[in-house]
Image (cartoon, rainbow, N blue to C red; front, side):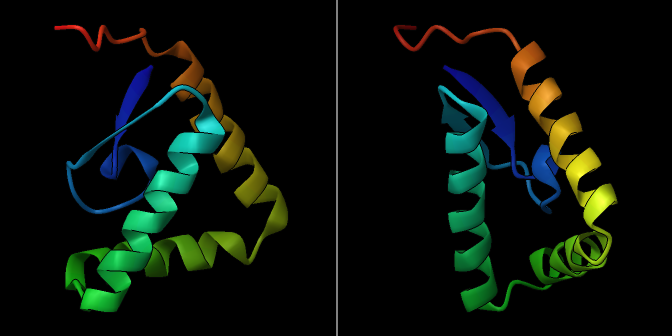
Length: 82
């Protein structure tokens, strides 16, 4: 199990997400982003605009995604028993 924050994944807050794989943490982050969008959270909406711009360039988006995957993979496993 590893953890990353919303901000580490391109978001706007320090809410921590925990998952065993990068795909799982990306899905948790996406769900959080959807919730913040539905609430009209201004700081998250601003972060989403930046991601929207990034998504316009497939190569840059893929590079960003792979960089975040490597960051996730490099994180230490957390001990959930503590």
